[in-house]
Image (tube, rainbow, N blue to C red):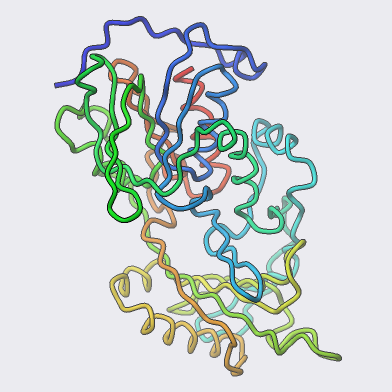
Amino acid sequence: MTPSRSRSRARGTAAQVAAGGAADAPRRIAVVGAGMAGIACARTLAQAGHHPVVFERSDRPGGRMSTVDSPFGGFDAGAQYFTVRDARFARALETVPGLCRPWSASSVRVLDAAGRQAAAAPPPREPHWVATPGMQSLVATWAEPLARAGRLLPGLQVDRIGADPLQPGRWQLHTLGAGGARQVHAGFDAVLLALPASRARALLEGPGLPAASAEGLENVEVAPCWTLMLAYPHAVQPGLTTLGPQWNAARSTHHRIAWMARESSKPGRAAVERWTVQASPAWSQEHLDDAPDRVQAKLLRAFAEVTGLRAAPVHADVLCWRDAQTLRPLGRSHVWDGAAGIGLAGDWCLGHRVEDAFISGLELALAVA
């Protein structure tokens, strides 16, 4: 049974939010997920005068914009770069001047299934941007005001949503933290899930939750991605700038590899030669449940085949994104059930780009505010 919503829901206009105007009736809103969509949503709600509280199961914000640290420098293990097409995204980036810099994509190569160069990619029609010193820096910087206000709660996984028994018409969240510690966080006027579609759908299957909020999620299709991270510090010596190929990024039709990028070619990065290798959606799905060491060995062999770089890396690691690339999006920017106070956002609503996640979170916040 859906909790009663007898109170009126004051709604700020998009113009009020854009101008930083306060909401007529500030509400306490839970945002689950601190990736791009979740932080874009929460910061917009805060600007509108509401009180968002962001729950994140990882120890820091970022989502698929996370940067994986290593002794040799960081790896953009998820999103490699972003483009800017929406004026609202452009205005938001103006709030962090100098944080993001263009990454030359003129060196991108298109490789055939055997790793041979099939073509040089045409000059990019739009700049390819990266945050510095890692992709995570953009989300982390936007999340800082929330963290300072105590509204960002890392290390807490929301595993159940339910009606608040002490405050009719409101929600409570059950979380699992470090060491198995369980907590209940109550008194929320709305719950916004900025999660992969599969995780959002699982949470909405709980008792007492509105079925309408999950409509269409079963049609969303998202592919996994295995990511390999390699470091070659022995390339940093007099007279030697790289050990690998002369190009810095490539798309490939190799049956295992879809994308490769030399991390050290991005602006603001450490000089140690590092490569991020992302497997194809089909291969990742086929090997989704393989042991990490087995996946690492297979992708390392494929990387050597494609690049001709046979030297053993000093550092190698793999990471599996179970929800990586949207193959079939929801087809609208967000979901908002105002009667129940449940909302959904994520790049999967519109596509798989960083900007899609931002627009989804922004437009959900505008609908709620």
